[in-house]
Length: 248
Image (cartoon, rainbow, N blue to C red; front, top):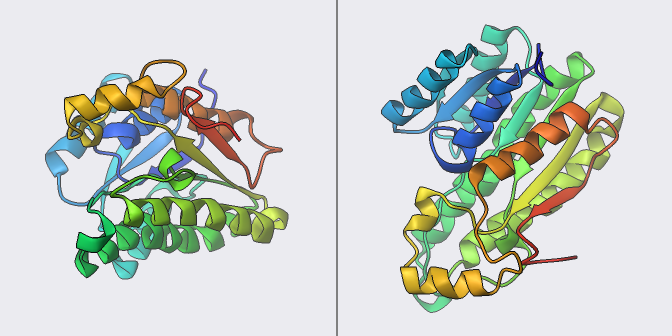
């Protein structure tokens, strides 16, 4: 028997990296999972096939979450297909790195649209659904780089810091609706996004992590499952999963 049997979940950006690990972990624990992806249907299908092999249930949910109409329509479709929506994991995120003097308007806007606006669009669509059932778990994936300076990532840091602030306000506003809202702030994690970082820089970053390694995506996913399965009295909080690299 899984820890979240009977629950339904939508995970944005679930075709790869941390989102993939979250979708698999929730399915392993008994949830029916909607796998959101923007473009790479083949990768999303691979996740779906892995869930099916483990005996889980899932659907694909294509949408560009940075587009308000697409994001809200997707949430509505998922809730209709599942007949209810219990868990929303706002995970999708992109980077468009550049130092501020060279950062273009397009690089700034694209990251804010996907990372921060997408979180709002999906959350605002899920709120009436969750309110009507007096139950909801919203988990926003932020980043340690929304807590500390990150050279070349002003757009990314602003989006992830914004998610932390958004989470606290949403939690306060929804506390009487049966909906909890929390954020997880991963440190540097072994994903294809991080693989693009030059090896020499990776070595330097690792040297600043007390646990002397990067996170595995599955470790972030287990924090999500904890909030869904055991976090009934937790809201407006952030869980830092960063190997001790940032301590509040």
